[in-house]
Each structure stands twice: as structure tokens, then as C-alpha cells.
View: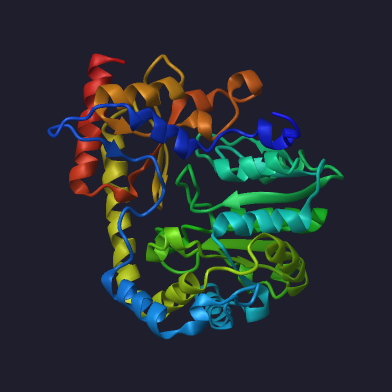
Length: 398
């Protein structure tokens, strides 16, 4: 194909779309339907009160159908600032908040303000594949930061990777795909490292609403100068089941958000009016409902952790928010294991090869030995089915 951007051509295909192709031609029986634990997205639509509010907005709010402010609905920016100040302590102002068309766009916008072709950022593994895909697309080198069996990155190891073209360190907590929740002191250590070296700390907290610890998961916003280093990313998609409406946020210094505004205006002009109003309505009215959603996710997390505790052949490396990250017991690379699980167990999981470099590319080998389980959409019966099917294939082999 002529005139194809070589960076884009070298970027991997979307992993979730690839996994969907695995099941496109598969046959599943009524007594053994597919158990799909591949994607980190709510399987249900927004709760009925929110859907009704959205219908009312569509019919009665003309502004919801028009172009809006590039950096987002002012009332939503105000609400995020107020809630973050309450939840994290410290002070977050509305001019430190921008609304984006999903959290992936927030990440792309942050990178656009920080790095250009040939620069690099530090990316712990296992990484979120869309982060790596975007870095590859725009020619920013991902300097891979390996992690131990606890999946926690080491600031001193990160420091050894920094050079004069390093622009940021990227963290995700609760982690996608690993599920681990980074301790507050670890995040503070990374903030201190980034500040000392004059680079940014990008902290993706898409799954903050499902953190296992009550109260603030870190104290980064209590630093009065937090925005000289910290760039926080967030998604409304998981909290309010608004995945199709693409609403995210980026919190950063107002001077950086002025640069973000240039990028957003060139890409999408403004976030969706309906999605932003739905997110605001959710923040204003669904606090108790969201607390119940969190409790249910934590119950499922406990069931997953308990189940793997009884299965020594499946070491659990991380578990939290929507995800479990496990080592499989088979003498096959994880991409072949994941494909075989579709046919042998009617089970769709994602392989670790989608979340880190292969051994042949300098990886530690963990990518070939691990699987991600997105358990948030599995109820108690679904989790029991997961373990029954894993037991069956472990006994019979692949």
C-alpha cells in the first residue's frame, strides 16, 4: 500500500478485536455457552434512572446536540474538581480539569503535550496495550520497565532508564491488566523521581471507583504543587456504564491544558454533549448506586482470589478492580493457550503476549506464561464456571 505511515503499519492490531475473531467461527452449545472474560467493559447499559435522564436530556436540552467547549462542559469540570478535592484532599480547581472523549484520548492528549518522535517514556509491564499502541503510532519509544512477581514497578529501576529524551513515567492503578493497586508511598516515590528528573508522572486511574481501600488511594493531590509533575487520567465509562458515550478526563496544570485544547480541537473539537451530561447526572445522583457496584466488584475480587488460592498450578500475580493476572500451567505460550481455551473450554481470556514483550524481543518470558481475566462481568455463577472449566483443562491438558 503506497504512502502508509510506517509507525502505524508497525503498530499491532487492536487486541480485543483480534480476540473477537477467535470466537467468530467457533461453535458453542446451549449447555456450554461462551464465558467471555476478555474485555474490561461493563456488559450492561447504564442504570435505568440514568438512561431516563439521558432520554430527557436528548428531548429537552438543545445544547446537548451542539458543539461545546473544547475542554469540556464547565459544570462537569466544576464537579470533578469538587469531588476530587473531597476524595483526595488538597485542592483541585476546575481549570486543572479537561474532559475528553474517553480515557484513551486523554492519554493521547497528554503524550501530545509531552513528547515527539524520538522521545521516550517509561512503561511498566504488563502494560495496557492501547498505551503501547499509541506510543508506537506516534513514534515515541516505550522504555520497558520490568516488574517482579508482585507486578509492582521499582523507582530505582525506572531511574536507570531515564535519559535526556525521557518525557514521562506511566503508571496505572488499579492496574490494567495486572489488577494490582499501587501503594501510596510507591506512587509518591515515582512522583518524587519524576519531579527530580524534570519529567511528568502520568497516572491512569480509570478504575479508581473500584479500589479495595476505603478513602484516598494516595496523597498526590495534597501537594500544593501537584500539577508541576502529575497528570492524572480518568474514565467515566466504568463507573456509570457509559463506554459507548466516550467520556474521560485529564487533570493537569492549566498551562498544559491550553496545549491539550489545541490537540483536542484538531481531533474531536469537543467531547460528546450527551455523554458529558450523563456523567454529570451520574455524579450528582448515583453515589449510592456506584457504592453498591463497588461492593459487588470487591465481592467478585474476593471470590477470584479465594479460587486461585486453592489452585497452586495457577499462581495469581495480581487481582483488583476488573482484573486478575495469572500464570497458566501449560507448556505453551499464552497466545496459543488462549486460543485453545476457546475451543476446549468455551472460555475467552486475553494472553499475556498482548500486554508485554515476548522473550524473543527482550521480554522476561512472563508474557508467554500469563493470562488476563476480566472478571468484573462474571457473577458468582460465572466465577464458579470459570474455575470448573480451568480445572477441566488443567486435568485433561490442551
